[in-house]
Image (cartoon, rainbow, N blue to C red; front, side, top):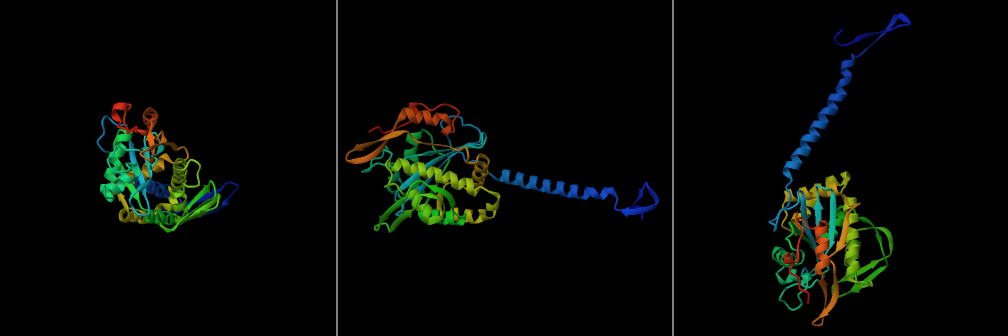
Length: 325
């Protein structure tokens, strides 16, 4: 009996007593809690060991735990990357930077209308097309991104629906109809939950903006920031396998699963509340009868050296090869 129970006497009545479990059993919950913590630590360590930072060869030493990824969105025909955004993920500082590259950016290409967005189709689409985009983007920013992902419209719609949509404040009424593309955009201004089709209309709309493509890239940055903020939550952890399947099946990327895990962990650390966003500096110009966005070298260098570049050293004019028209 002594091994299982201990006697507790009441000082005011020595004839009365009660039996209770020994105090040592109260440590059972603590042991259970410590076991859970240990298991969680082991799992976390396993994930960190499995994750691999995306890195490519760069012209100089790079900052620790900083990677850059080009995110592109292909149009309906899969010939142009009308949305291009460079993500600089600084896992050491916990900072995310989003830099938009206008689709009409003038390149050093030799095709008829050498805009950056058309390089994807000129080089044949898919992985070859993205290598073409990366080649000409590297001329503008002075380094090759550590990875890329190009998302076609149906994959974008499916991903937004899979993650439950996005709460977003649509900045203005948006209406656009193009029967040749079977495209209808019809959104009302105001805060609302956008499903995949509505989100697709939001990120594609530009004809109703006074600044056209420049305003569109700003809205796209705001949308991506809102999506990441809402999707990077514990409750969405169960959707990760399905999202990985979607990326594997419908997204053209040179990032492997381990690199995607690293990026997911790094993005979760960075968050989006304090994300920095910008557009590659430049201005519009008519050249040979076509409208282009001509990159400003001085302004671009200042932006790149403010934290967008993953390099330890500052980039110089010698690193850039910008077509100034």
